[in-house]
Length: 321
Length: 296
Image (cartoon, rainbow over the protein chains, first blue to last red):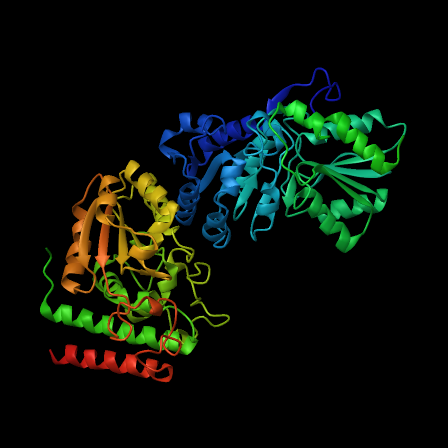
């Protein structure tokens, strides 16, 4: 399930998950001739260029016109193509939200949205480009599947798995390089949460790079507290069974994500728990605020999303000294 | 210019007139819906479904069919009525279910309930981008010459930035298999288009975006058909047809009055005809026209 020596924090390899999506789309393009990729003037930085260079005849450069990109993707999907729309999360999901709702979600078109620049990990471009509301505004749309890959390899798998789904699919990628801790041959099933590490005192649920921190923290604190770590890569449809079973076992749930705590994965988990198995819950993440520009690692540190910050918040909630 | 016999023209005019009567009945029964736009587009819809479109009402999803994409979905009563008249799988009783719960004939087109509508639509400014997607898909399939993509839009929805994004992209890709027809009726909800947000010079705008532009009288059947057929000769560029129309066409007290945009007879402005007489008088006027056509 993991890369070799993944707990070796000093030597683990880092790579952006957007690269995984980019390579994954290119690989898939060889086999799927009805696949089309659309970009909005961020071809290289959102990693659509791997596909574009190989299959220029199936690549559409829309320019800085994200709303039209969405409409075009809808039209292609009506005609039986499988469009992948690729750009930064705020412009892919935020700017054209109503066209997405009307032209893709409502008529159940199979369009795959692949983002880059999700979360405060976007870093120095600042809050205008750090999308921390994308999970909230996609998971509330009927027919959507929402996937937040853990790292490079999982993102590569996600873009391929999305091809076989129905309706709209959102795949959320951060811009920054993040630790590559999942193995190339690790299983990935849309809608099925993965227990990365079993534990009995507290359930810690995450998506994206923070999962790596949770694994390190679980190892480091193993003599004080037994932490169960769950990779909730699919936020919608949400794997209720795995969440409820773990919450029943541990009696306490901690969620963490590089996304606003309102409407994100933590909220989705809260909804499941509140209706099925109420358990003490703490949602950690971007605390309903716009942060600031800065290197991703500095932002993680300042806003408690680095390993140390997550550990401190978790220990406080768990009552571990 | 393709020749249409006087007999055929008369036939088409008669069909358009009956479609108008159908629209009045439909929105009156529903006590809800748009009246001005559907009446204004009845001649163009008739020309499409009874002469210009490559389609098969008995096989609505025929892969080689022309695609008719309705961007301004609110005028769907005229599409439902025309499709009914053309022999699509719509029963006469179903026309009375417009805007009612469970109906396929929703207040704005719902593709999932009726795939022959090609898309779901309603929110303005989105259809042209979708049509660009249809046109590009035809190109990927090397079917550009096999069928045409027609996109019907309102003039008001040219206020939307998304429309102009699509106009730009269609020109970039030289989509000669795409034609947009603008219902240039000069009204939108809050008033005339030139008061709300001026569109003119609309033709020059499209030309400067590298489109081929034509204009037509949207109520002259011969001119409509000739103009639509001329599109096939255009290469290397998408085509825009500005169709000058009269909103509310065919009912004197509705014509050119923006207040009839979004209300049915029975709820329209009362300064010319009392509400309880609006449906009746509209149908009576259309009936007189029908008789005139028959007698001509």
